[in-house]
Image 1 (cartoon, each protein chain N blue to C red):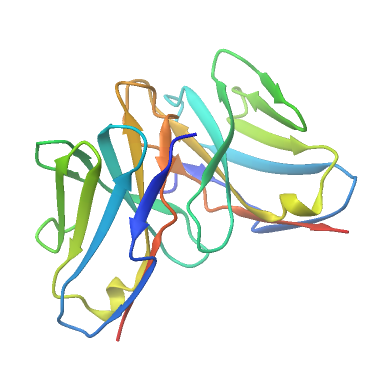
Image 2 (image 1 turned 90 degrees about the vertical axis):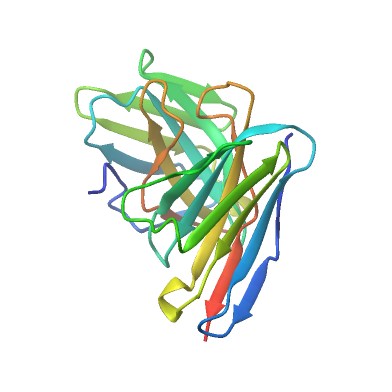
Length: 112
Length: 117
């Protein structure tokens, strides 16, 4: 049972434009959400996170938006750069839990 | 930032043999380490959680006798795939967490590609 879903397996964007990656979840107990970036044959690296008490968190070119009522979060990258090309995973955790629930990932390709 | 290493990065073994994968936290003490498995084009699936000095907690559906986890020190955890079969071929990733931080304070290793022939 996939509690975190990324319905778009891939996304292509022109360099300089905005990339929007989407993530949906089913577990209303999740209180912390994260985005990870992963290059081939490497482990995920943490990108940005958001607590359920917020609806937006911004860090440089990266902004994460959380819509709790829709159980939806999105990652905006602007402007997109070729080096952003990677697989992006969203993840979520329950209060006090050790583990993360990952989505299936979205492969972003930024075209120069 | 915190660095987690894994060894080997890739391994090919014959069916029926055992393979050990090491996960090390290089510049911090990891009280908790996690082992994930990723199939092609699929999500990372948590296999087990291990705390230093105690037995690992396995997720439902993961055979603890097949995937032996040892977390003998604060910087090292090992995953041994026993009597490996071709269906065990996968990408195995460990992560480590320091202290009692929130779940986001997990640092991932680079992963190990296991191919069982």
